[in-house]
Length: 510
Image 1 (cartoon, rainbow, N blue to C red):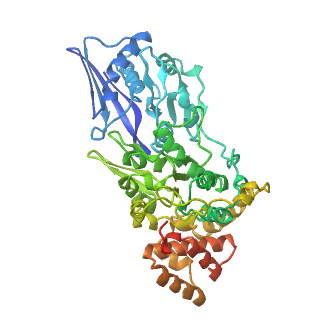
Image 2 (image 1 turned 90 degrees about the horizontal axis):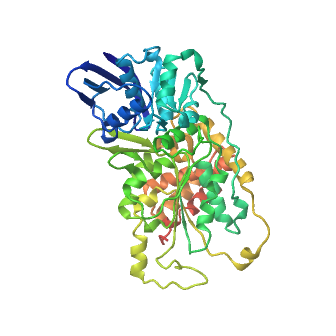
Image 3 (image 1 turned 135 degrees about the vertical axis):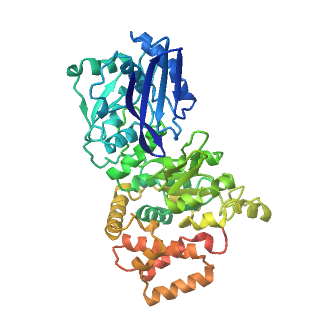
């Protein structure tokens, strides 16, 4: 007999329906899984066989069992097809009725004893099932929170194959969970606060500008000046997530298998800080089985790269396209996968190998050649994509000994939220959300310049030898500073402040 159970597989960050077709016929004993299965899917043969036997069901011995995963031209990965394959065998052999199977999507890994283990990517599977017209979803109990995020679906959490079979044998005994979430903005509570940062008022102002416009930022200063301390407080001044942003982040973490236990929906912006020994595949994604990298895990949040020049130069260069486009595309022989990477990059660097070039308290011991080689590890195109370059000097003793608290993250976040709200209204009909994402034609529309502002900008271009990309960055920064000021037009003070944030365009690179 022939049976079909619908499941789902992940391609990029979205899911597509996989039809699990099972045919059991008399003949020479054979058990085949076809349809481009990977190793984990092929090994489902033995997991399913043992799970059926240990759940008091019969595996069709002395029969030819063929499992086809359609569409057959897309590679299927992971153990999530175990449960639908087992159900298909039970239905094809008449041990279960095919009641309401057309409205169901099923996913789950089987243990040898018949228990059901969690799988990755359940949220995109639930969204894909709803888009495909399905009304019910059978998932492992551990995946219930993320499946229940999607409204309009009936959720059946299961612990075992026997419990799953009971849904078909005794449907009246089990009421489903109704999917859907009451979305509320994140209650922003952090263990750190911007008020804890002593001194560095100009750096905290730059951080506020970066947060308000979504700008990338590079901090240069000696060891112990507070670069990491400041960077880790950026999430405390960013506005709360919107529902669509939270769904995108949760999909990525679900696919990567990194959702915390019991978490259905990520409600805070991610902060990722990989070590400088990370590989290109670890940063942008990839591998033999492509997975999201750090830049996608930082989507809608912050990617902090400490000791920026210590990263492999080839690894840094792969950031160029994602920082511009907000997407990273991984090309493989079988398919091209795209992951979102709309993030804020915050980088920190010493000015030289010893870290004390230009320091007021400790002399630099590096030769000019060492300094030049160290600074050359960051290419011009990468620097151009960092909107803000700011020096973070050593703190004075009076600043270190001061007990006066600085401005709190809550106060700064209120100003950032107002500026972001202005940008949301400005870009309501465009596919962008903040000033950092403006394209050249958007700059012409939203950044008109008066004569005195143009005169100052011409002087900056001549003296700093600005590239076309640096010119665009200054205009975007000026627009953000004007938004923080509540101004409709860019004025001379806004442009002057923006130029001050292009430290590496002013003679010395670091």
